Image (cartoon, rainbow, N blue to C red; front, side):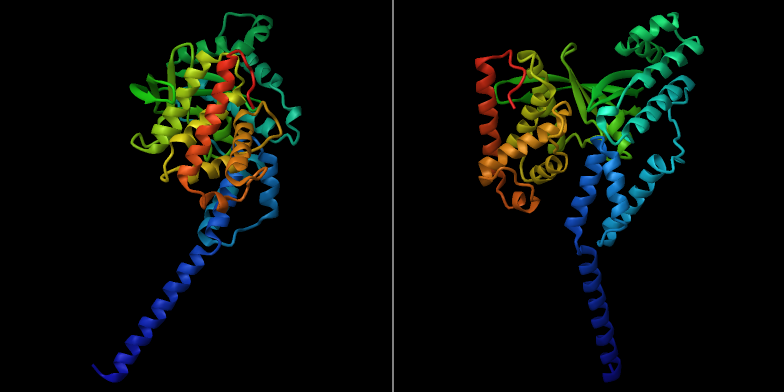
Length: 374
């Protein structure tokens, strides 16, 4: 090979290496910081803080990391279409007019209430008025309008109509929002779940095909959603199957153990508030998590923590749990810096969580009629 050719090849290789190095550095630039920022925004949106998220996106036009910025811009565009310009076109998936109409009423209600800056101004009066008018005007109920409006909030008539169309439905009130989950395909399985005090056989209903999936899924463009819930009356756990790899720690710990503790607590401590139930179930996650998921869960709890309203059970439980762990692990009132949590050994977090569980259990064993432990 001629010297000139060899030199040209070496120069080319050097340029390619330099470009690769530059690209790698550029891609990694502020990756973790920007990623945490975006995850925090999505978490806040899912918790109902849409107005503050929109304000923050107005303030922050772009992010420095190109990968995260690309995702940020796509999500921002969707959020603006849904909540700012309101020109989003939602395609209903059920193929049934009644189900689609009910879904539209709920989506419009969520958008209206999510855009109220003061959560105290939120109301469900218009929602139930619209549902009443819809059911009566479309001859879907034998009840009179006055009679239906007086009883509509128990959701039984709406549930009857939805199920009459061949769908399943579950109604909840979370974080100040009325919501309905509508699906039409499910499978059932049983699991043996080991908890600190005992081992239970859990019946799990896997929801496989949602048509309406709660206010947080709507508020966050699908970035946040309910993973599942427990029903005391039927001794059953419900699971959003699309949210889990059933072989993963996320399913085995963050879903199965979390929801199974809800079930046992609902039976053993029937007066315990929602925030306290969530606090104990989140402790269980941290007791059993390994390095596979521990720091991801800690980040979720940090991003979703908010002590403003005890009735918002998940954000409030996140805040109290992080606060109590901060005292134990860092001797601080509240450690909000995720980098310090990542430096903490998993075993230390496991042990600190176990200590918090023991403390809560001792209080409840002394008085199982308590409504609050946090």
